[in-house]
Length: 127
Image (tube, rainbow, N blue to C red):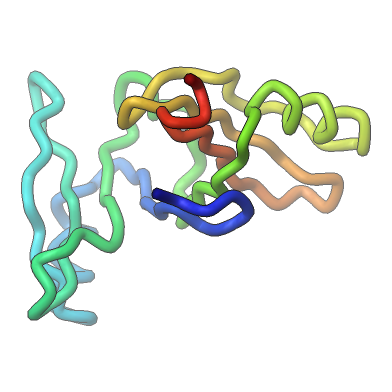
């Protein structure tokens, strides 16, 4: 189970996911595993020798079209709605409203300094 307040995942959304996938495979040794998105594939990047995905490389298409080309960290929160409320109360902004992913829900926020990250509520927190 992911712990609240930790980075639970990270991914990169770009227009040329295949080219960037190949870049990270060559530079850091991650092995790509395709993730079927219907008409195309995104990629889980697997750390060499572990068999475990450590990051995603995604196309900026569909629901990802509005995301900036940045390494997006997904910070685990127990209640996404409460976290959004605190975000906006403290001068942050919601860039992408909550939506489902990986059995849980995520949203994308911008903090008062302009930095962007995602908040992720795990499926077990929704019960």
